[in-house]
Image 1 (cartoon, rainbow, N blue to C red):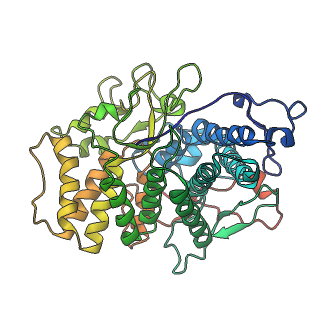
Image 2: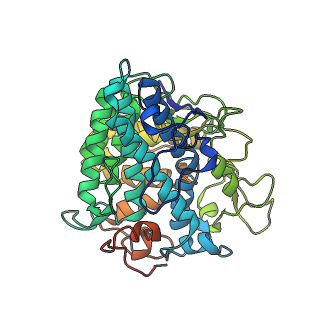
Amino acid sequence: MKSNIKIFTGGVLCLLVLAGFAGCKKFLDAPPLNTVTKAEALKDEAGVVAVMNGAYQIMNGSILGGKYQVFAELMADNIDGTTLNTDFGEIYNRKTSIFGDYKKYFYQDNYQANYRANTVLENLGVVVNKKDDLEGQARFVRAFAHFVAVRLFAQPYGYTPNNDHLGIPLRLTTEVTPGVRATVKQVYDQIIADLKIAENKLGATNGGYPTKWAAKALLARVYFSMNDFTNAYAYADQVISSGQFTFETDYSKRFSEGQSTEAIFQMINTPGAYDAGGELRSQFRSDINLPTLRFTQQLFSSISSGDARKAWFNNVKYPGLVVTTKYNKERFNVPMIHLTEMKLIRAESAAELNTNLTVAVNDINDIMNRAYGGIRTIPANSSASLIRTTVRAERAIEMVAEGDRLYEIKRIGARGENIDKRGAVWNCPGLALQFPQEEISSNTSFIRNPEGGCN
């Protein structure tokens, strides 16, 4: 069953945030601390559930509802950034400073969601009926929050032989302490540990909340980002083979108000309560006004006229500019992990391992049949090299505007191949965001990322 996120607006405790950060945002509709104390809010299972819902509220509204994707698209190589300035210009130019509100609030909110997940984990003693489920949910959210941060604010897994290069602060309790950067290996080890517990604590179905399949799918993504193809294949295969998700033949159903059969973990648009994907529409929607974020002519030209995914772009409405149509809807659900990604991971992992190549060919051909209407596929006896080349090419189109390309530049770069179309090397300083001033000032010994950018 799909793992959806339902948002509940009200009765959410405004918990303490990181040292130096401001309090909860008004949109959380949290009661003030002087009317609902932390002890009162966490005295029973209902209070712990409310805090867990608050963690989702932040992740979905401030992190996964568009900002995570915007950062990744800006820093990758598909955006036309010639007219961008202020925060977006700095991010696009891969030369971020310790300042910038867009980055600051993103970072703050990500750790606020993590804090709420830690609060749940520390108060499981009052839970009677949903202890395993709430622990699984909290660990899933904590893992996701750390994964989001380490991918954006650190160099990738593989940057150093032992991955002992600096990552991000690991925050595993509600104790507010000065930020200290763990190594990337330590961060990834913790993410995997949390997700492995989550996959065992969560059920196969979960009434709209993360399931064991969501945890397994995120593990597949995590292992793939590490270039650990054995584990990436194994977890993607478990999700695909579960039979819980079916391949969509209609692209329009990936982002729609309906329930996509491909969605493994998604945010559900709830009229009157939660408007999923608001930031995606704000920055990419092109049917009403010229959007802030446009795409390069190079990307548009790389997609053949016989590819159904060409319809995701428009170069006519605003002459000389390429915009996406992917988010041209008043409302839609936002799938964060879907079956197409699992097929891409399984196929490329098989090619890298030079095993299960028939499975890989079938995965690629599922994607190509949908894109090209059955007139373009790869042979059943395709080599591992052809499979790898093809799946990367299909992924570059299939995942466009979903915040994936940046991490492919980093992941493939760590294997020794520069693929950035802007001409930068995969490990240049600018491909890791600078930490915000608020985190740096919490600890005078905090080690910031190197200054300087790249193409």
